[in-house]
Length: 242
Image (cartoon, rainbow, N blue to C red):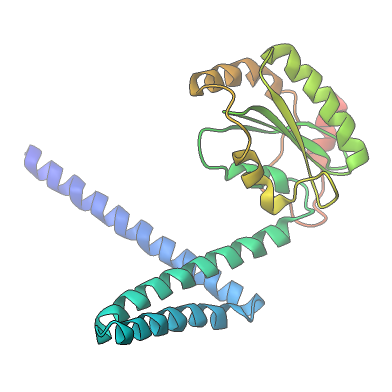
């Protein structure tokens, strides 16, 4: 009986994996179609990677007198390069569309890899300016998006609140934008990843617990960029309650 149940469970798991893989392939294909319509250079660049790598491998095979041996390797390398080009151009396109929209920085931070603790919109205004709090190995990072003359005061206020809780833990502040001294949306993740590691993983969890109470005072924001011209009624009500 147990053996039959195990087999049935294994079949269901395999079926779920196949369905997930099919869904991923569908998503990639849809992303390719959208990117191809908007980026006329995509297909030529991908073909250049594929054909170029194959040609180089074939020429090296002729020079080293191994003829066709290196050609399959060249095709594989070319295909990999084409996939990398596709991924980077899609990413650049996504960031370009998200840039300038309320909540874009929170969306970018939500995709951080590694042991990070994100609380979106811990402070904000009715104009869509907001500050997000990230806790990680560097310490506490406050990321602001919006009009610089407004978010600077938001950052200062939030920094004072956090400093009362975290003690000597380093606190970094970042303003997302394209002006001097700001960090662009596309480079936000890499900027955080380059910060020095000042605290341990256990301390990250401890800080997250200490600062959890502060999160409830922030404006509730949906994850990801809002549509252009989206209404901010929920944020306005939250700000009035504060």
